Length: 237
Image (cartoon, rainbow, N blue to C red; front, side, top):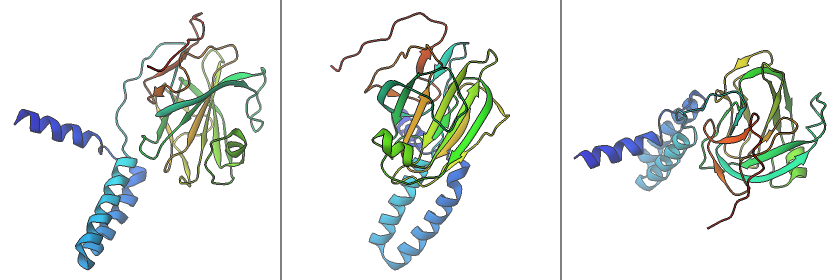
């Protein structure tokens, strides 16, 4: 009995809580499912599966964020696809030369609530309209709809989060705006139905993750600005 209770508890954690952005989609899904069952059992089953996926997609689990000055926390769930030094986005008014950009690709099965990598003030928030193609290359990402958020810490260190819409995702929802204060790990936005999130570390920062590594928003440490540890190497095994 205990094992069965644990199973259902684990199952429920995959679907609840559902973020408020998903409530209307769940309502539509439930209505479609009801109508589909009235027409055909098989159609009803298909609609029910689709509705369950909507609940799964909009899930918003709690996360445990390490709170210490200097830590840069992952902004998105997914796989680290690229780590490279690039100039900050041209849409932002930033100086300081190249920064390390950590690219995280989200699949349609990842949690899509994005979180603040550092505590600070939203000093810039820029929305850029664009296309909706699969952002597998930097050129495609530059052409896609995206939102750029600059977080400035109390010591004036700046960290950039870029949320990029993709082929399936059609909207980026912002939870914070210019002038807002946020805590590390706080929810800052959501991308509907899968895409990519880039985190630009402050100039001179060294990443503590590697390409291919899986990261968890609000929990995984991308960098430690107070540490002199060299960049880590990694291997698959």
